[in-house]
Structures are given as C-alpha cells and as structure tokens.
Amino acid sequence: MSDPTIVEWVNGALAGDQDAFAEIVYAFQDSVYNLCYRMLGERTEAEDASQETFIRAFLNLSRYDAERSMKTWLLSIASNHCIDRLRRRRLVWLSLEDPLPDNMALASHEPEPEHAMLLSERSEKVQGMLAELSPDYRAAVVLRYWYDYSYAEIADILDTTESAIKSRLFRARQALAENMDETAKANLTSPLLEGA
Image (tube, rainbow, N blue to C red; front, side, top):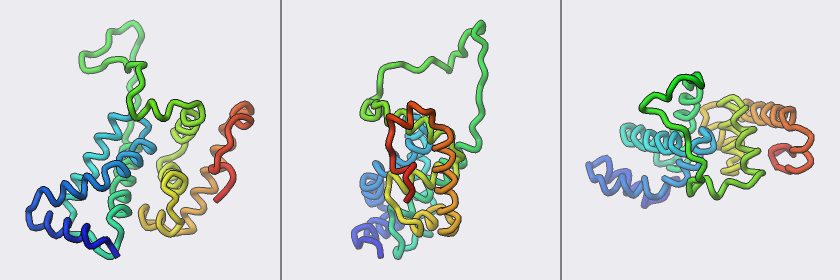
C-alpha cells in the first residue's frame, strides 16, 4: 500500500491543489530523471522526458491505484515514454561542408554537473553498451541493475511477465558480453555480466 502522505498528495492534487502535486514531483523527480538519463543517455533529453512523465502522471492521476507504489507507477510511465522516444529517434546526417542550421550547435565538451559524476571510464563504457541495447532490453537492465527492482516489479512496470523479463535480461547480458572488446572485459567487472 502506498504511503498515507502520498495518498494525501494525490487526493489534494485531484482536488485542484497544485502544491500537493508539486510535493509528488519533489519527492520523485530524482528517481524519474535518473531512469530517463540511463535510458536516453543525454541530459537535456532526460530532462524533457522527466517533465513529460510528470505531465502524463498529472493528467492520469485519477487512474493511480493507491495500492501500488507511487514510485513504481511513475517509473512505469517514464520507462514507457523513454522506450517510445528511443523508437522514434531519427539520425540527422549533416555534411561537413554545409553550415550548421541556426537551431543546432555542437555540444560542449565541458561536463555537465550530472555528467561530471559519471565521467569515470567504467560509467562511460557501461552507458555506451546500454546505448547498443534495444529499448525493451535497456529498460529491463536499468530497472534491475540501477534500481534493484525484482523481476515481478519490473514486469509490473513494463506491463509484461516475469519470464519475459528474465528472458530480456538474459539476452541483454549476452548482447553486452558479445559487444565488449577484450580490453573492456579485462578492465570492467559488472554485475550485468554475472547474472542476476
């Protein structure tokens, strides 16, 4: 069952109290952002996805089940939104001879505050390997190894079965192991490759 304070916030937000919904956002914004960042791999896009998650949660707040964890419900919305975004991504090919469009600039090499914490070689390697996974596999891996959710919780979040989650994680680990070069294998030990 959900925390009584969260139920109060939900009821307040449903009654039109904007501060009540703001409390929900403050309580869960870090978890939602971290999931979006791990799924999408880019700070600005993760911020947009986090904001969209809370907009969708607000619009569907009347459908929230108080028997379910608010965090699980929000991460479910976030992971589904990120999977949709990943499926819609399109590469934009630019010629080196053509000038950049006005609305596009090259990314700065200065680390962002969130990114500075993740700059170690291991984090970059893991993030790069995650980017190679399909959105469904990536969601399962992030929820299992970054959030330590059980198979049942991941199945609930991703609206599938436990056996499907086990299969996705097994295949994701296989894909990660196959994509690692020998140097990375020697320098990187990760629970992702050791099984669950």
